Image: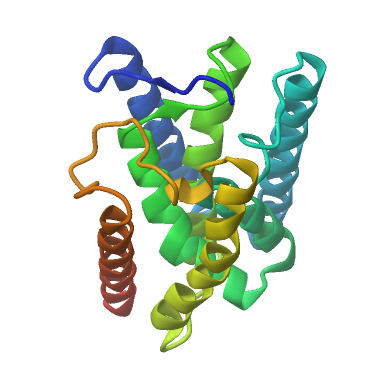
Length: 225
């Protein structure tokens, strides 16, 4: 397994990554909100292809430099799963995928930007990849909601939480079979996060409850729009 590297909270690098990510998301949403439908649709497709391109470049880079391994680089972390669902949603606008992006990609991306843990290395490309991926997980559902005016279904928040359990059920035993830690179901991430309460396996139950709370808060915010 590759070494995981934490960016120290409140360090200069941490501030640069966090502020540039949030500024980029807000700026793009602001610039695109009054554009024509044609421009919005072109941007939507361009964003999807940018997601795919970045994903493929990162995959090829890890394969070429010999760091790719089955324990770290399968797209089985919640963020990678959500990132893939985001670019599929940008192309297809599939309703349940949009709801996954809205209720799961936003909190996953937000917390990853607050507590960055690099899993591929520290080259300039991998820094860019980390912040592009997690800022993109905020941008895609916000764009579809605020600019393209998509909306979740009435009980989508609860159904999305149920859908999350499907990869959990498969990934949990897989971690023990291949000695991996996807979705951090075998061990805590090394970042300092106040939501990581207790030891294994109790922190998983806490994270489930915290995830459900995040999903419900987003649901309440959307209801008020």
